[in-house]
Length: 299
Image 1 (cartoon, rainbow, N blue to C red):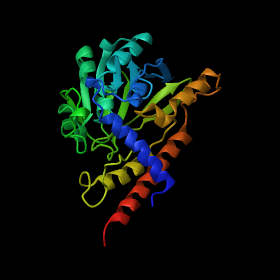
Image 2 (image 1 turned 135 degrees about the vertical axis):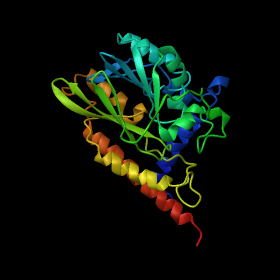
Image 3 (image 1 turned 60 degrees about the vertical axis):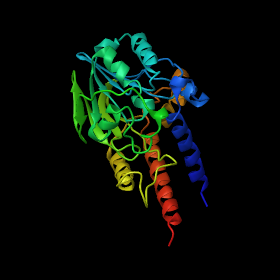
């Protein structure tokens, strides 16, 4: 029998899968999708990192004197929100030199092609996700046959390796391949100066195990269970002050913005405890899922 945690995980994962498989271009987007893609006020998170995404789908602008880095492109319909957010903060999309990605699902990669064309930026994607991005989602191990999960394909200029660093204007981000959710799911880490102190920033990819993923027996892809296990070990090893992610709900963005608006004495986005709790919850759900699948294997 599934535990309460597993039932909650299934519901959450089903929602993500539902949103991943809508056909927005045909007007079939769900209310959840519409809510995730609503505009919000852009804001500075810490140091030179800014939130320029939608309500539930994150995009981050990392600014430098030599141009900017943009992480994640949202849905195919999200670029106008991102562009408007960048402009409202006093920056220009045309000054973005590098486009990065958390993972190759259409709610995070869908807008990359439009953003790359508008900015002329170099597109850098993890080697294990690059083919999926270049195929517009057609080579995804779970969603590849689902036309409604497709997105505009984009040429990848550079295929990133695990622990590779991306530098621009004195800012360096490190790519950590934390696979499982996708083969090349990429967590990004950086150090930023904020109010006289140096902060470790971690932008987690995702630890979500979608309902149709299989970890055992005939796995969704060979080694997926081992990848998830390695991901939790890697995430535990990263120092983190500022916890961010591709979905605003993962790091409770709305709650933190309310605390900031109410005059919080410290930056609410400095949340190492929240980061550790997120990692441990994900690991617990992974182990429960693995146990559940193994229990279903016939003797």
